[in-house]
Image (cartoon, rainbow, N blue to C red; front, side, top):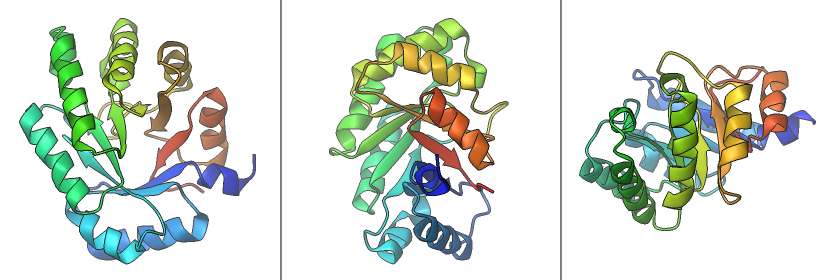
Length: 210
């Protein structure tokens, strides 16, 4: 797999709390130069980035990030606001506490509401695999599939661990055919990215690939 094919599957990401517009703009320039799938940036920069990119690349942003415990109404509002500002893709975090409490119907209802607020745009669901048991991961594969979301995603990059090849294989074995897989967290080289793609990921979240 050549570098251009790898880069075409990368959401070029900058979600640090101290990110500045100068850094976001540089990220956009790097994404254009390398032909990435999108830029993934904080919600407060979506409008600026969308205007700057002018439709050259999709703009992705985050909802309920990174902890996932915002109320459903808050996540739905964040999604609608991001879409109105020009976001093309939304990455949202599930409520981990609800997983532990087995509030599966609430999780499904929340994801369904967020997907509706996307207005046909791509929704990726971050389940934060490092905090879940294998049983919980499999359950989330099924709920994400039922919700109508487009992707299941491993990690925020802000918790105790990132993507693993084992989790990608687990996702592939348990999500519905329409659900794609995004690996994120700790992927830093083209060789690592290629290994995740070969395992079943069709998107890679990365702040830098060298």
